[in-house]
Amino acid sequence: MYKLLHFGRSCKAYLRLYGERAPEIKLCCEKCGRSFHKHGRYYRSFTTKCSFHQIPIYRLYCPECKDTVSLLPDFLVPWARVATWVREAAMTRKLLGFSFKQVRNTTTTPAVRYSRSTLRRWWKRHLRTASSVALWIAGQLISTGIHEDLLRTYPSHVVARPVDTLRWLQQLLPLYTPSHPWRQGYWAWLNSRLPGPNLL
Ligand SMILES: [Zn+2]
Image: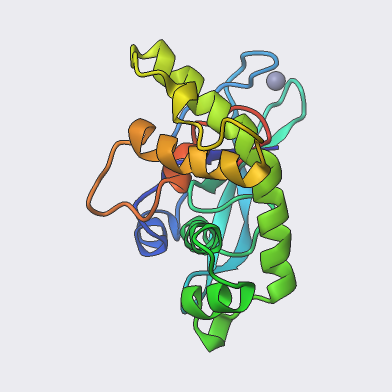
């Protein structure tokens, strides 16, 4: 199991704070309610736009359920070896009409370049998960009292294609995510809040 949490604005900040010691956070097991114990760490590698990084990932353990939880910083997801803000930039450019080759060449440098097949996999996944994420955000906006007719902002009223849902998601993201000058994209912040397995 894993849990995404905000552990600093960047990889550099994360390493400064948690490069040598575990974060002091109190979390309880969702199954039994007991407090988790610290349970060591492992190293995980990933890339940003131009460099390769390795950071410690800390783990927690429930003595009752014997479950282990990995605490991921919000700029990573369990299934990608690339920082979330790079994937977000890539998917945003693809949606704007860039070719896979153009996307790849403008979001990474040759030193850390991911393959075009990786990009295709991200795109397929993004098309698949966008609708559940968009609906979840719409629900959150409605529950916080936004009265705008959010469904009316859906780009196509004739035939709904997956790419229309992506465009809708693009419109919803800035409505829901508070903006900060240092924030790199919307996805990292959002991923630490999304329920269930469908992360961006
Ligand atoms: Zn437990």
